[in-house]
Image 1 (cartoon, helix red, strand yellow):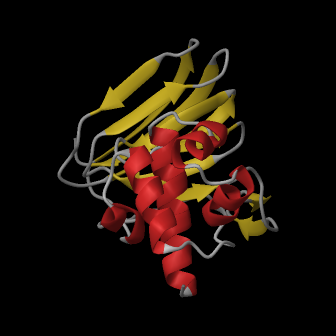
Image 2: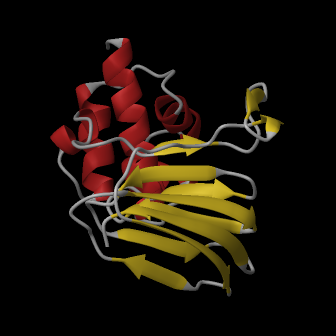
Length: 182
């Protein structure tokens, strides 16, 4: 399996498993595939056979093509808390998270969310959305591609699809940035 295909499969299995709220152990039981093998596939290290891809797809209720095709549109960008080296910026050294050249409104929201609380934003014709987790853990991003984020993690994506934030800890604090058209 080519490296690009492995990376696409890894990202899609993880994304769809998390979105379905299926643990690695549950997926292993449903597919009769070892947890270590599934973990290797999710981390882009395993060579999945066609039978393995078909079994994972069936368990996640998607087609094998859904697992092997990169999602269309602008990518969702996740930056884990303070990874890499700080760079010089207008306020001194720091970690650059995101930028956009947009017209229209720029809104910054600080949200305190309770356990299992969920918030949703409708799609917009233009703009970007960004989220920084300042406390707790959430499942957030485009509704079809949520990502689990911990304190300090940052996510950025196009505003063209539905966006959801769901708390997966005892509560969470997040900062949401809306850039562009409303």
